[in-house]
Image (cartoon, rainbow, N blue to C red):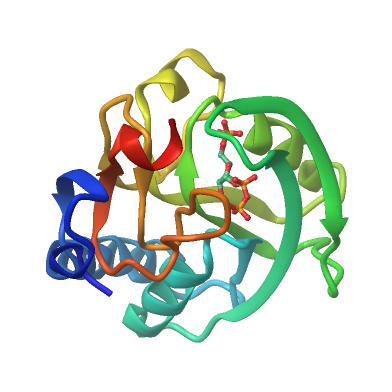
Length: 184
Ligand code: PRP
């Protein structure tokens, strides 16, 4: 679905599908250049939100990559980060001496990635970088410094392009602010 198909549920579209794909092409070119001549990078998608960016980023690359997934939980069904991170699904492969790029849909407080990066670093990858499609302002107060960022967003409750509210809106093509009338 796109924003025009759910009138009244969104207050503002930040990025359309076309703008997102254009930006992903730019980031992919950067990653292609950075990893040229290196051993095959592993794109590590963080379920569930990263499924869209993983699908689009991996296909925009000209490099060979491998893909794997972790599932962690930091949010409940509400709109605030809980600070509680649990690993629900671990990697299927050993990342020792591998070039790893963690692929995220959004960094908000940075709590999820702070935990995840510490955990992954202990497995001794050759390198460990982060690509996030979106970043919210609070992320600047965290120690997380992603090498690849799609877009910065204002501090609003955004949905779409993998971002959900209570499990819905992930399949919205655009990235948009959810109307408070939906969750109040
Ligand atoms: C979201 C998002 C990040 C995390 C960012 O995941 O995908 O993993 O929250 O928030 P933080 O920077 O404040 O830690 P969520 O736990 O909502 O799960 P989901 O990907 O299944 O939606």
